[in-house]
Length: 246
Length: 279
Image (tube, rainbow over all chains, first blue to last red):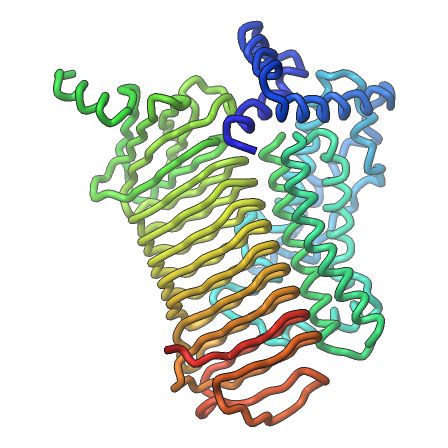
């Protein structure tokens, strides 16, 4: 998609929300009349809105923020470094819980705001006050993790193909937030996120399949663990994108 | 404004509504909610200046404590694409977060942090720490003297003439590291090739982890390193004479080059491993 298209598609949510003034709304409509690609994007967005409408009026199952805030206030740091093992207990909202919040078009922006808050909380919890901290996948700055250092207990955990125990909770929580946010993101963002996630999921699937055939292979166990850690970093980044899109 | 100034602005295609802010040591430039094209360059003045091209949305500078924010002039975020040039003191730290931004940065010695959903990032001649994360967009860093940590989930990563520690990742793209003089290097790629050409420092640590792609590692003939190679489904080729000390698993083994001063680790799930002598 060209920059010109992106400039337009970024305004479609505002158009659907009715927050553009008459002049700007007219410009969007005129562009839609001329541009097939943008009409396609708009159609996708309308479909999202229509699906939300079918789910009817309802408040979100629970407000995510209190749990996130209390988790953030807790001792989430260790010597100034983020505590990756800290996992918040997210409410057991279904992935489509967000869609139930409102059937109105103008609910899109409202949904974004609390999803962004949830996303912000998870990011803060996962990576400290900023998302630019060292990740377990890339290792400490200026250092190269030795195989022994990166493959202690988690290797045993992943020999079954499951995520390492220290990652499982956070992976699930992040996936839940992203699933909930999906309907409120613009189609282009969703495409980018899903495409990238597909690459990692494929790598995990490859590794699990190989490990299933050769369960005692330490290389495969370490490799699978690395893929899961990479997925965690990806999800953390993706949640950050939700904030930008909120 | 003199006629000469007006003429210069017209020739440069720049609006007159530009902003200059005096910079103080310890200041940080923050760029958020800006989409479009942004070029940042360091200069020898203690001033931060933004100029907007005539075709783009106007942006301005707003100080908040020790932070100078680049914001839309009308205060409304994400309305239109920006085409702007920012000049900053070389020493200033810069943080960028955007959904869609093509960014170029050059000539700074402060720390640089960039995050974006999409957009290409080109960085050159930098002396401080560099961190870039993008979901979709190429990353190029050249002539960096500090630590470099970059990740593109969906595109290529190219690093050239880097002397600080390197951490590079691509989810779906190639990673090219050329003329690297770092003492520590860590590279990951899920779906793409990795090419490394550089020196191996005594006591240095170099790690390459690939899922689906080929690893080509070109190092000097005089390299002294202990090398660990692991592959699940791939071949290993070497310009060096390899005498395997230890098979640690089916396709995993260690060997030494010279007296084994540095450590090189190459792990590939599905792909070829080539260890070449750098010409």
